[in-house]
Length: 410
Ligand code: DCP
Ligand code: MG
View (cartoon, rainbow, N blue to C red):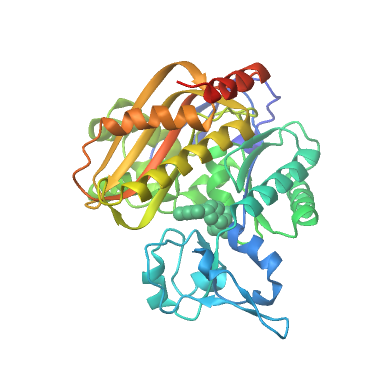
């Protein structure tokens, strides 16, 4: 009996037997849900192509600085920067599929990418535009299916369980609504849970729809590499490889006792469950952010003494940006922390918890300054970050009060 063949009503609890690799596995669930994961295609780059449609079909990477802004020519056309000759520390935020075909992907250094794709167009990132398009696509989906879990700038989970239409039809409607609101395409996976849907939204990119049931886990999911499971990162992948486990199927076929002995009780049991496509996590519709942070990697390493003025300016601007984010999102923060990465890539963090929540740039700068005093500053620094955590929603009075306190002489 497969899950698809059982006619469970929402809220029913039954045991369902699914054939595992070599043994039976019992799945306990309350109901069969229909969860979608939607992920925008080459998001930042696709937003840029809306602005510069003449670049469609070309390899384009996003990640430059302001100097890479396209220049208007006398004949009305634009001159675009190319990767060739790029010098600096920037990394690619994303690339068009044409650029990916040349081997350049998110997270790759721009200098390295320049060797692989010297003629690719380089554009600076424009985060305000990406946030605006993010807001637009999410509200377009919400008009059709309001049970949404926001997972970041370009992805959401959607609980479709209570909607009457069949999944293909819903997926097509959602994609059409997203396109109508933004001019952008996305890819959607629909399965009984978040774990499988996240894997599926990536299976037919770009502009794809992938719909799987639990009975498809063995044929569609098990052949995939273990790293396709959200939560199995590079370190876990490396450890699994050392035990001869490369695919999700090989993970599913590994006795749970062995996984527990190698990875500990919690992780071992989790690996066993996810390899069988089991995930009961609900779609959380109102998630509160845990922290808000901003960081900056410098163009050249800076020293606390020789480059004091420059460092201080960057530090203050990071604090102001965190303050802006807090105000925009309507939070106050009780714990302010900083992160510092030395030129040898070694990183240190410090934080301080305040008696009252703050949201003004001055207060954040003061608290972050306290943290900085507790860090050795002999070495050169390549990155500085400021983080606000311990967040609570600001009441209107909180914001006024902190703004007022910030203006008082200390
Ligand atoms: N991003 C980033 N740095 C990374 C990865 C991603 O700044 N290392 C940004 C740029 C992406 C956006 O987040 O456009 C969404 O990330 P995705 O992983 O969903 O990548 P894309 O949407 O660009 O491509 P895909 O079509 O594979 O989803
Ligand atoms: Mg994406």
